[in-house]
Image 1 (cartoon, rainbow, N blue to C red):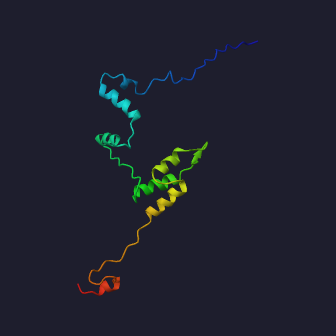
Image 2 (image 1 turned 120 degrees about the horizontal axis):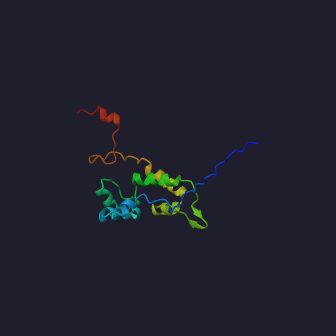
Image 3 (image 1 turned 135 degrees about the horizontal axis):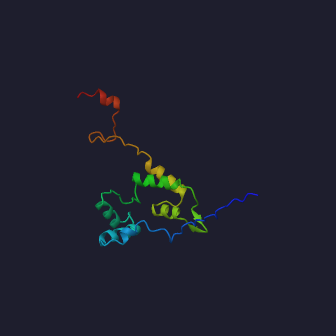
Length: 149
């Protein structure tokens, strides 16, 4: 009879959050107060308010303020993008963050957002050129070509 000596299995426990050191712990414990405070601010900073945009500009970024009213192409882009997002507008009878953001930008639903984006993006119809000598008269491109220069 042959006996085989088997070593006991070593179990390695998965590290928990308490065992994993913070990525920024070296900076938070830094003696430089400006470096430590910038890390703390960074976690709570909102880039879309005026103060946050000013701070971002100082760092070389170029963030624009949200355009929540009017016929702006950036507003049309936002409404089209958010109007096509998957997910419900209401959850447990309460509006989701999706619907709340659409409302903040002037749309009452995803369908309304898509409709408004389409209307904003639609090219405007050009009006005929104004002729102060002959009001109401318009010239065709053929007539403009025939004029002496």
